[in-house]
Length: 82
Image (cartoon, rainbow, N blue to C red; front, side, top):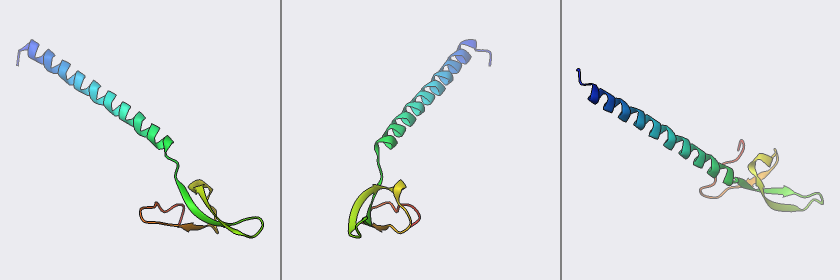
């Protein structure tokens, strides 16, 4: 509307807002990734040992194989394709 100072001030505020939003989102994504790396999800599995005796193990869910019997409790994540 012809007021150059107001236009410049609005443009500066928009640039600052976008920059701060980007920085905050970037920092929060880094923090979330660091938390994900700290969490190790395991499952309680009943397996048969080499000598034929059954045993219970806490193993990473990536190491579950067909035939493992998984013990679930309230609030547990269901691992693999159970």
